[in-house]
Image 1 (tube, rainbow, N blue to C red):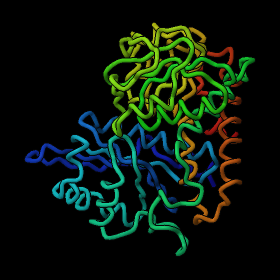
Image 2 (image 1 turned 60 degrees about the vertical axis):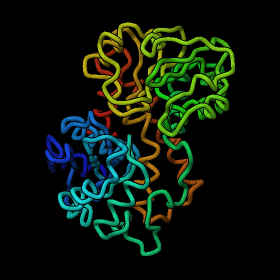
Image 3 (image 1 turned 180 degrees about the horizontal axis):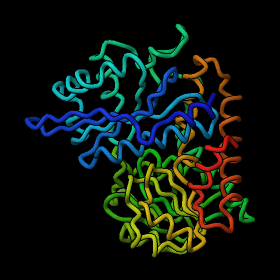
Length: 370
């Protein structure tokens, strides 16, 4: 069924959009709408959201589901405004007016960058349905965050497994690896914690204001205490020994892994030229711009794409949505780990010695039903 779904997706996802000039708000909802399949994805709230990004994110979700053998298609919504303005009644009303019919019939949306639980809850209350009302099981919970197996730092868990599998392919492991993390929000800190649990040392981490670095490793517990809900690190609370660097300069440091977990489109061609690590991991969706990924590949720097590395949260929701929340959590997470590790190794093997990026090799395998 997954092979059939992949073969039926169109050249570009379906796009619905609205503009309210009086409020200065623009909205987008893109989905690979396939008959008989639910579509799922997150809502991104930011002043930089645009139609092209939302469309690419929706297609990326479809690849994530396909990589885990889940018969769902991808979706993504975007609200172009400040995150603190998204919960205004006028904005919620626009979401209900323009996207409500899709949310009632085929599309489920959850949190993404800038979207809070409060925003999601208010949107569904306005539409007049539960977030998971489309799941075919009357005993399914109303909200995604109440699904069986829902864990803290789920996306970071997948990032850690993909990183470990990539380093194993290169003859090493996460144990003892030196990691640089771009971004200190949920995905960045979650990836740092999960990698530390596998024995890695996080030697650098950045937020919007710059980077903190220590060759001997940063104390994550203290870093988390100094970080607010928006991923900004309070330097005055960082009493441990460290150096302060420019945010982008951190990516050029000597290390084993760079985890990109801040936002989309941050690694340009120019910035890619400065990266020196053997493995780059897209914890954030679309973190590497087109052209930069090919440049890194030509320099034998392996980029684990978002469709593999940041797929674990989507996999949890997708599996439980497709199975009516009946998947045993332990078995579910065992399958997700197995799938991410297998996809990483197979994509690396397929791309090795070719002009194809690891992303291209992964997509080719999915199209071929491998």
